[in-house]
View 1 (cartoon, rainbow, N blue to C red):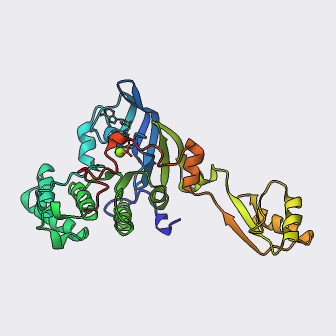
View 2: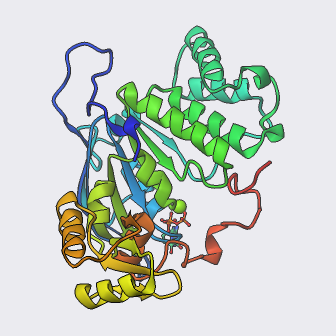
View 3: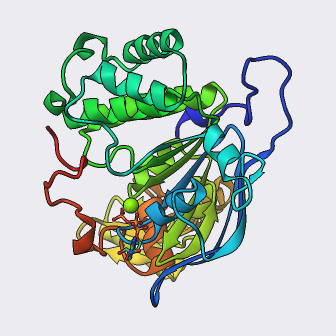
Length: 349
Ligand SMILES: Nc1ncnc2c1ncn2[C@@H]1O[C@H](COP(=O)(O)OP(=O)(O)OP(=O)(O)O)[C@@H](O)[C@H]1O
Ligand SMILES: [Mg+2]
């Protein structure tokens, strides 16, 4: 768990009086099908302002479709959605003015320089020339791209391209940012850099809607996580809440010899025994009370324990338990993933 996650929700922009927490996104009964293929099968989402919400799911789960609907890029078949206080169906322009989208596939123009890409965004956002230049310079500095400002994006690595892509999203100063798999294909260092940027944005009051297929990323960043599987939300909560939904936590006891192992196994009943390692796995959540009771029991029976460790389930366990399959099982061939083609992701250029 990360201490960075602890922060006041819905910090007000400008740092004056704090606002009460309002929903940045409130969606109910969201549905979308392509022909007879049901992609979103009635999902509800609630994202408070100033928080990071992560939609977690494997390839083909419907993450990008959700982002496209919430960001007005495509229409839903059904559902009531309010984004930053505006009705998606009747006030799409007001929604568009307040949001930014960094898509799964890069919006960076390879033939333009970093600076030109940013200025193009400023023009699209109707900023005046001076303000556009000022904003571009500021973002190049902030995203560690000042030294390559005049290089064409075609020469950039995957990590640089991702940073530029996000910088372009920030030109319009959005209050709510959709990040569709922002770190797919990045090396661990670039991924951590992106996480740092995301945390800084939220500290400044921005709301983040993040899709990912990395359990670790959702665990690391998100205030709340929704698990999407085949168009349905199979769970929603904080990382800790999700972990608690899964059996599989256990206490591992190691004994000094076979006699102690035998005695403990006889006493404790429902355990998993490993004779060569001299260990017993006892089901349990590792709470202080249950640990003390367990050790007291062994102590009273004169059974000596060498070491004790607690295994709490991680999000991988959660996903498996909730969906019946691991996160990487559904590798759609039609999504362009891992093909190394010119999709702007998964390629470390
Ligand atoms: N325009 C479209 N026409 C037909 N089917 C589509 C269209 N867009 C998406 N789909 C299908 O909808 C399903 C969900 O796709 P989506 O891109 O939302 O998944 P995803 O969770 O973003 O996956 P990935 O992790 O691979 O990006 C997939 O089966 C996909 O093939
Ligand atoms: Mg996607």
